Image 1: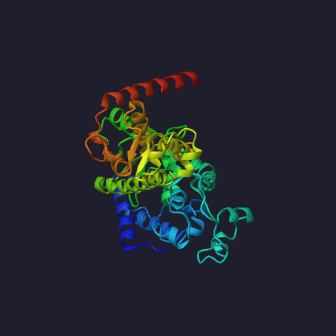
Image 2 (image 1 turned 45 degrees about the vertical axis):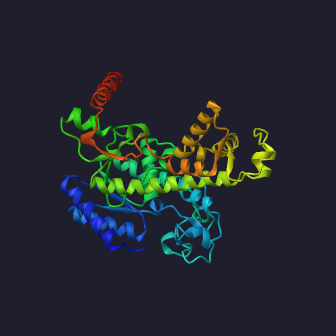
Image 3 (image 1 turned 90 degrees about the vertical axis):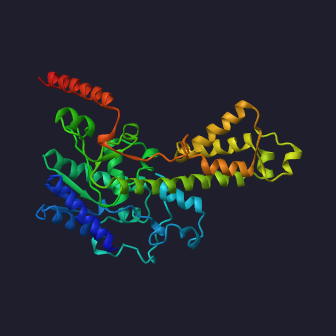
Length: 388
């Protein structure tokens, strides 16, 4: 796929940001896909570092969506006659794999010369990938090629694709399978990591504020400490907010779909079979009335799957239902009321969605950062004494 005019502009803007911030590159890595290769060249040219050696590998390719490849993500379920919730699970979960790509698929890559050195097993595994499968492809290259280059003192640039970068972030920051799904990867905005001698990320706040005594530049995730995110973005805060907000909105849409589907599955057969639900003969006649205990039971069954266990809206709905059951005043919920709860449960107490990114300069937890900095110094001193 060729770069769009917008993509070309973003690639050049990324290179300009590297140049303006004095970031020098010693070794670049990218995939064998056209848009990543073009982005790498444009970025290095604008950074005035066109001479930097570039290593290309299929292992840094984007995750392969199998039979879904080439279809519109919003209408694929209709075209392929697949359940809409299942398609969203294939796209957004960590371990769910899409249907494999057949040899007659227009995007089948089995005859492409770029992949002629892949073993038969590697080619078969590349027919469809979950994010977990992609990680198993990407991480051997990261550990065997990129890490040694970093240990040699090289400043490395990886220009790749959203799920590839997401996999590397997960590895570097040790982010959980559940949390990594919520992290958006913006295009064309450099993400900076500084790693210590153990290849662990350095806290950008502490490093800049207390070692170099300068104000931190760039933007990091507003919940970065909670999720273990230590990267810093260089670029436009409003664009970062917009990209993450769109991903969050899609994630909420998927979770609302799950909650609505649960309500639709509350059939009379389910009610009779569920030993936890004591639905009266009178209430069975009212299809627009849901039993609180029954919704809670169905939701708990869904959340037993680790893929759904930490989804924010599902957790909040469970808490709401448990609160209603504890009070004992809301044994039933009208369908209209349930729909309203589903629509508004993602809002905070002020009725607003919390912005996902924050400027490093605007963070208010300086005392906590200073405490972490002092603790890190103590650990360094202990290591030094042990070495001596």
